[in-house]
Image (cartoon, rainbow, N blue to C red; front, side):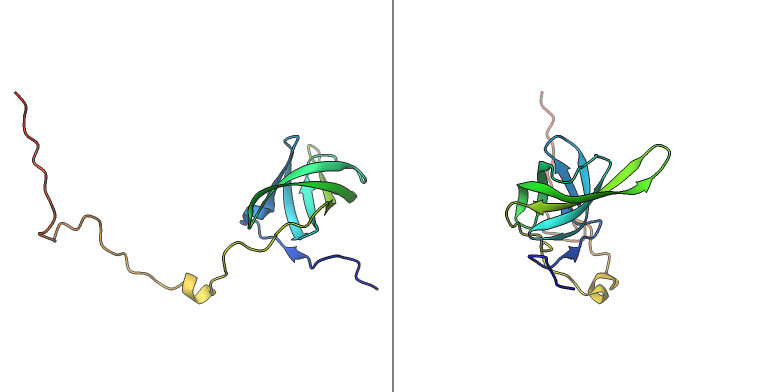
Length: 136
């Protein structure tokens, strides 16, 4: 099978800013994976293939409003009170969807840290103390 995508797709972690997008009309989208030319989103909004919409995306470059076309859509979950849809969005222009910042190794993140010293440190004699004068 031939690869038809314009750019590589990457999964989007739930705690990334990119994971939450908003339709211009107010509907919320949860981005499941993304590339610079499109995204797979999940929402309670009924999105039909061929429809054009404006999507507010928070990328590494900041908040971006991008015109999108629904390439395909399907019902992903059906419950008594909720219908969830998955929709493939095709962006009109490329946006930056890389992870903001850089990744830290998990060994650094999980290393124990000292508690540190409370500020101001009362043991230091060079601190300035203010005395309030009573006014007459």
